[in-house]
Amino acid sequence: MSEVDVCVVGLGYIGLPTSLVLATSGSNVHGVDISDTVVEQLNAGQATFEEPGLQECLDAAIATNNLSVSNRTVPASTYIIAVPTPIGSDRSPDISYVLAAAAQIAVHIQSGSLVILESTSPVGTTEAVAKAIYSSRDDLDPGDIFLAHCPERVIPGHMLHEITTNDRVVGGLSFEDAEKAADLYRTFCTGSIHLTDARTAELTKLAENSFRDVNIAFANELSMLADELGVDAWDVISLANKHPRVNILQPGPGVGGHCIAVDPWFLISSAPSTTELIRAARNVNDSKPLFVNRQIVQEVKSSGRNSVAILGLAFKANVDDLRGSPAVEIVERLALENTDLMIHVAEPFVSELPERLGGFPNVRLESLESCLDREEIVVLLVDHDQFKNIDSTVLSTKRLIDTRGLWRELNV
Ligand SMILES: NC(=O)c1ccc[n+]([C@@H]2O[C@H](COP(=O)([O-])OP(=O)(O)OC[C@H]3O[C@@H](n4cnc5c(N)ncnc54)[C@H](O)[C@@H]3O)[C@@H](O)[C@H]2O)c1
Image (cartoon, rainbow, N blue to C red; front, side):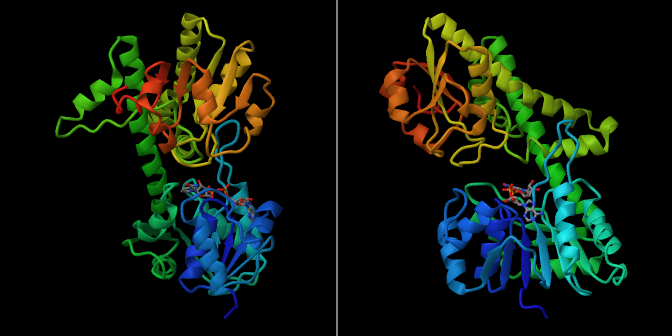
């Protein structure tokens, strides 16, 4: 039995909370990341991103002496892969990080070890991980190691609660593989654990995120359609949802982040001729930022002003994650195409502009108060709690573009 119970490869939004929850539940955990910054920060006892309760959980894990962190994969009984699975510029899935992690693990793995792929992956990736490991280890025979895909469904902002309480789907290359992986999740997960095969687990995760994307696309399309017809989309949605079997989601400025906006492409790429609806939804959601840009430019022209306030850059409310954020895309296009327009951005979750916006002389990060004091046109792109609390008398003096319907609820 190796000294380390679980070696978690990749300590980002998924790998870090998973490592901490495992460590505080009694497993001896070694976390690995190729980023020196991540390793240094964690070894200094500092959480690497904003998430409620994360710092406290890191403190608790360190106090157990069950957690170590480095940039080297080490021998362990179980390996969890939690590395990125992005799409390339042609939107095809890039599983190179997963295969690199598999290669790191292959060096140390022993007969009887368990490998769990947590990264959201195209159908067939767990089999590809098995192939990568076995092809580099002549001494192992197929079936010597246990392999399973256990996708993660946590929502940023509630990760530590959901990681322990959500139901889990555990898909093994064989039933024994699934059972072995389920045993690990039972050490910290109070939700139900559903056993299946790896391909079904892979498709289930992709189906979940594509379902969300398609439903958000309906809301976004409806919001653009309502605007064209001169009707308030939020009124329509609220009234339509009085129907006992209708539940239309809320529109927004687009769909961002690295999950819902990315994972449907894994399906489109795997089965291009049978994913028409999923592709159409992606295109609708990708078109929404451009629609918002046109709204802002129109408001600027009709007001005669040469500056705007933008509230929010994150891809969703109350997180510091700007990856794939439609808000960043909107500000970037606005800055690029309107060089005379001064753009004052308030984003309480970051202390500096992201690289994509940092080079624009007409984009500045400012406090919410200064944005509201100075600007007549106020564009809400993210429904952070802090923006909910803005005094409605202040808002009533502004020209508002509320892409989230946040202030509508406040009856401004
Ligand atoms: N963030 C979420 O809310 C969420 C939810 C569900 C599923 N997922 C999926 O989980 C996976 C991980 O996502 P994330 O948000 O944690 O990504 P992330 O970018 O936050 O973290 C990944 C980490 O892996 C590290 N890394 C990359 N290659 C490595 C290697 N070979 N060895 C060691 N470390 C390596 C990176 O430096 C990074 O710190 C993705 O497949 C994602 O789609 C994410």
